[in-house]
Amino acid sequence: MFDHGVPFRLNARVRRLVAPNPGVMTGPGTNTYLLGDDEVAVLDPGPAIPAHIDAILAAAKERIRWIVCTHTHPDHSPAWKAVAEATGAQVIGASPPDDMFQDKTFKPAVEVQHDQVLATGEFTLRAVHTPGHVGNHYCYFLEEEGMLFAGDHIMNGSTVVIIPPSGDMKAYIESLQLLLQYPLQTIAPGHGDVLQEPVVAVDWLVNHRLQREQKVVDGLRNTGRASVDELVKVVYDDVATSLHKMAKLSLSAHLIKLQQERRVRRYQSDDSWELTQS
Image 1 (cartoon, rainbow, N blue to C red):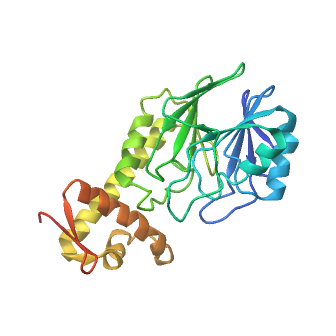
Image 2: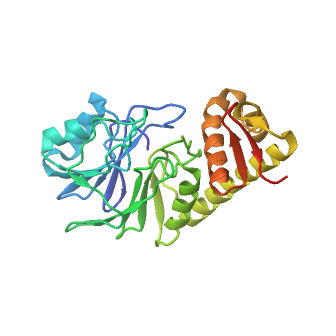
């Protein structure tokens, strides 16, 4: 099912190719989705690994008309250029924000907007702006199948790291709640297998983030004014210390959300935080 370079059919309109970039952050590898058969959209072409590019082209080269990207992190978009040059496909997505984690090569022909639709003779793909993981993140809803292509907004088997400033915890939670307005049947994540109970998955993620947020509040109540380095040991005491470096990024995102809500204050002098009310 996760054989790299081998197209796997998920339904009548969708095949999945898994890039050969497995790892702690990418699971089995980045999922590239091929939508349609007569005219094909490549959704998240993935990293610019020659073998993966060759697999995409071998699966649908002469029929590829569109390249669609959920966002521009280096494991999701860089193969766009080689695929576009080989096929002349139209590139659809949002330009990268100005931070250090982006694929700066990405230049879409079409700057995607919320609720924009790509309609073909085979499928209807609707863009859903879902900032949070990163500001230029879009999920795409395949209306005929009720399938949501979630990029890194939702992953199977792990939670998403939110990295400020482009990552925004408040926006992330609100974007999750927005997805419940769509008639979801399945979720096709950027990493891992298809999620068959989408509403359950979204509800779990929202509750998980809010529970973690409560641990931040409780942690500050117990420690008093504290730095992120001090607080991560309390808030992420259920996570291996080897992962605390990444956990501090999401912890910072939680603190920024609480600051936006005026529930915590930040002291720039020593980069510490405390509750506004104990």
